Length: 103
Image (spheres, rainbow, N blue to C red):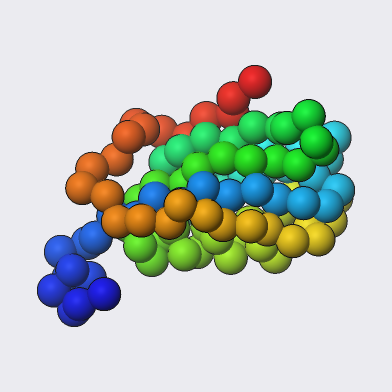
């Protein structure tokens, strides 16, 4: 990405799926809390396959910080085996006004 795009605060969107022990360990609650602290928007939800999936949008540096959290930190009692990121793209505006848990 160009320096100009970084200076203008390019917005990014990325979908994710987290594998491991991520259900029944407050993973969604911690994800929502962390996203709000970092200032990103999007959503998180459990899947029937036992994973957690969602989308994060915001300034590129904040999205990257959230990606690192989803890959390595998670909730205190979770175990993250791997996190897949896909559909990463630059966006012109945010699709969400906050970060929520979907059911």
